Image 1: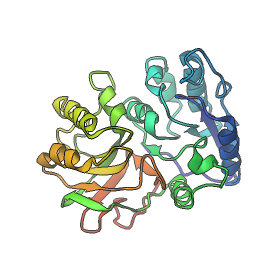
Image 2: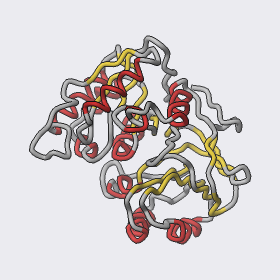
Image 3: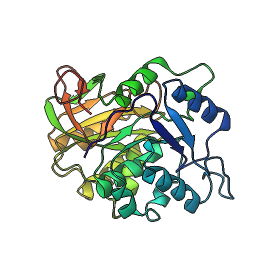
Length: 302
């Protein structure tokens, strides 16, 4: 199930399912989205704080903002303002039947929002957008949006998928399938839950930040032993910021799967951040070192 592209005049809602956003970054991020002609509404509890200061308000309030935005017929897209931690705590509080009845729309976020990407795919069957968030430096920073990040996001919001180039090949080949995944830590944390990830028949996208190679090994081993990679068609690896040299362990754990593995995509953490549509068909082509839409030129119909 797919949703239409965003156009000037469309309403987008900003919510905080995870950590608390810096007010200045949030304000600038809102202003830049309004500069695209979008009408921006901010969830009632986005700037709330509570005793657990790594959460943007209570679980109940964060879930209420998310569900209210998704179920509002006037809202065409829901943008998560930042990552951090906490989105996974909301999954058991959402009324999935009500959200399913609301129909498809755009969900934007990355990092901790991987929990929502995975759950929305399983519960709602919608494609979601893995990309930069309004209250982060790349969009809301004082110097203005990072140019490549901003251009990629605008392309994605128009309903297309640009071709994203990697910088190395771990296993050569070509593979096509629906793109799925996100932050490795979050995906591993969902093993054994109702929302356990599965890449069967799909392309897996993985990235992370601040994880030592042995921890990457542990999380990949957990996903492998849980069967998450059974039937995977290909693997696209994004950024590994502050992860030392992750490529020996990535090759060791993933090459035996016998599928193409493309690495070095500018997606995940770091700068620039390319926007990727999860739940839509993509193509890994290691000859061109690219991940693109299914028509081969990086464009994909909404």
